Amino acid sequence: MTASADTRHTPPTTAGPRPPGRGSRSRARRGGPLGTRAWFLLPGVAFLAVFSAIPIFQLVRMSVSEVGSATLNQEWPFVGLANYLEGFTSGAMVDAIVRTVVVAVIVTAVGMGLGLAAAIALRTKGRWSAIVLAGMVFVWALPPVVNGSVWKFLFAEDGLINTLVLLTPLRSEPIPFLYDATWALISVALVTTWAVIPFNALVFRAALLGISPEIFEAAALDGATRWQEIRHIMIPAAKPTALVLLVLTIVYGFRSFDFIYVMTYGGPGTATNTLPFLGYLQAFSRYDFGLGASTSVLAVLLVLVLAVLYSRSILKEER
Amino acid sequence: MNQRAGLGETLIKVLLTLLYGVPLLWIVLTSLKPSSLVFDRASMFVFTPTLDAYANALNSELFTALRQSILIAAGTTAVVLLIAVPAAYGLARTRGPLVAVLLGSLIVLQMLPQTATVIPLFQLFGSWSMLDSLGGVILADAALLTPFAIILLRPFFRTVPVELEEAAAIDGTARLGTFLRIALPVARNGVATTGTIVFLLAWGEFLYAVNFFLSPGTYPLSALLAQQVSAFGIDWPGLMALAVLTAVPILIVYTLSYKLLRDGLTVGAVK
Image (tube, rainbow over all chains, first blue to last red; front, side, top):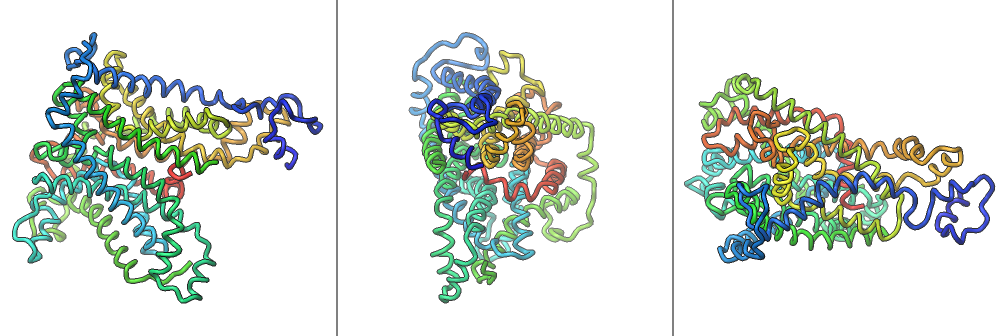
């Protein structure tokens, strides 16, 4: 296979005489810089152009137009940046951005921390670790509506968590997990975090499983403590993965809406209206599609920045 | 690898066991309680189980929703694999700046908030007469999950040695033939992993379903659950029974594919 390995990197125009048995067909197959496999991409490109690119284009158009539910399928009057201005001057957009950042910060900090802690704790072989890991993957696989429903129930005024809290001397009245503005935002953020920890733990786990056992043996011979092993072997090993995962987790926290939909539907009042959910409510509850589109475009732009950061780190790794 | 478990690690394990065990246990327990005992402190863990909630939940509405869920999840998986498998193969076998552009676009699409795409899709489906149809929801779900599927599948195709395909090509196998007979069988683990994840995600998707189906009579299970949990005066045992019934097919798929999920879930994210 050496012959084919070194010709693979040679441009076809400068390629010298080929070994016998290689016709022009096989040369064409390896092709120029784009190769001849590019046509396999066509169905995907066509499909996503129709069902992803056109919708985004339409979203941007809506955001600079006056669109209500009655005029949805008619000609839309162009209003320039009026929708954006309305969002900003009413304060709804700024409040939503602040809430979105709070959620993203909680999800990222706790999700990364506990994800790594879980990967380290569940790294050891044994039945307990295996069962906990399996349970976490199952939770990841469950529909968010199922998970959200359970947490809404656990967080209820006379739900399990409040029942247990009231048994302790710490509080004499139930915690208003979903009925107080601040608590509601924190509760929703924590459930969102809970749902992402299994994924993060699996990513870190893969990184930790890549450490060669000799390194641990050498550390043990040197009398390293548990904490030193974590600090000097495991955390450095997880670092390259952690950077990529960090961006993914921020984006996840940023765009998450399913637990808000299920647990608070943006309430109480507007307390859990994050940017993605605010856009949805404006379009589908207030039927102001133009306003909802402008809020959503802003959410898309913020995600775009993160997506570019992520793409660059992923593509760099590839080279 | 070091097998000593420190105190900190044991504490983390206890915490994780509670965090992920209690909610799972609680859904099942509550679904077996009579309504009157749901918030009764004395019968928190000890009570006479009843299947009333399940008996009430198992009506024709539920079977319609179950059928819709199966059709949507299976249809979405089929459409996504049909499009994403050749696309991932094409990307794995293509070089140059086009790849970077396409991968970058896929990453952007994968990260878009779903609440942003539901707004224009609702309008477009309205003008294309695709609202209130199974096909519309399947295509929307497929568009949502295809970028992720391509990103996840591509590394699996990259591990297929080019030499294998070249050898087959010398024997006269056509281009499509080398893909179907050589690359696809070698990457079958990736296809299975991706198919499983797409099925799970499509099963749980509810935002498109709630908005594109115009009446709850045609909702899938996830949408039915989303509608009931945000209603006032929730019937908790009934809701938990519905949650369990929504989760049972997931449990089956999960049991069959746990190892694939555990080892393959993260491939697209970091490679």
